Image 1 (cartoon, helix red, strand yellow):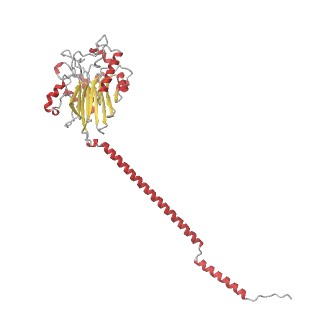
Image 2 (image 1 turned 90 degrees about the vertical axis):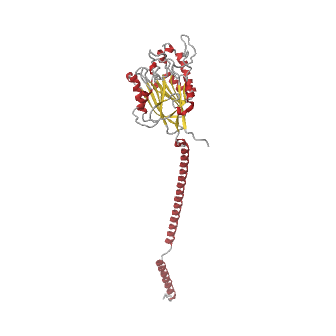
Image 3 (image 1 turned 120 degrees about the horizontal axis):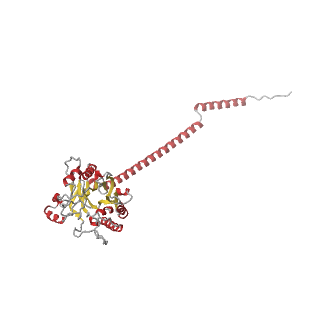
Length: 409
């Protein structure tokens, strides 16, 4: 007998893919809008990266309509959601969520955005609640977020809205481009003044629960040393340089360099497997997308690096056995159905037998009545006998009387 799994693992990725229209602001591209052939080549690399990642859920930022259409055409194992489907061209970009359709079912989704740039500074978030197919009834809410890199109020507004939407959800993963590296407050890599504590405060919203999983945590390499004990040092060594961009656009003038960890993952309810924290990076030495004016083969498709982590969620006994229960329930229903059919058949047979008896009884009654009608009653029989006797007697008297002969004179 195969052993019962105690948890379901979910591999996720967050990745800012650099929208086509945003290339005109990017220093790596010399702040010139990329050519269509460059965009095509770069988007092909992104699609292949996602397809080969084997991630269950992918949370993206800066997805435009052209790239989204490639997701729906080429990533056949995924279902994709984004608000960019409502736009006519690539003039705008949004957050996006992809999930493995063989592992999850979408239960609900919400796009958070505002045309008023004073609210979120043109940034947005996409929330989606997925139900696990293996772990029936278990739901996880995923949020792809893109925060402002210069407007503190706008960033807090968006975090507050996210916190309000997910406040009643037990299992939540929020990931994306936070446009702030708060690792070292003096580094000049955060204009919005965000910190880990501030982000968690706004994500928690109005929750006043002391339960272990009621508050958000940040997923970082080696964040839970209880899983590594004496191997903690070795795990931390594997983390290496933790940066998700080599050229942070919102770095201040005081920043000594523009390497920054601005892509982050926060979670509650689920368990983060700390040793799976991984940034897919070639490093920042001579990092480039391509060299201009002569176009060269693209090695890196974005100014961000993908960040990956694996989370696990407990599989309750009833969840694990739900298929068996459904099977047993089906069998039970089948047996009940069979029993009902047999009962109905028995009733039909009884009714049939009853009708037969009833028909037989009616036949016997009619036959009896017919016989009775043909038999004379006792008084009639007596009367008939008496009449017959008198008739015989009369005839006898007549025979004994002398016959009179009329003589003709």
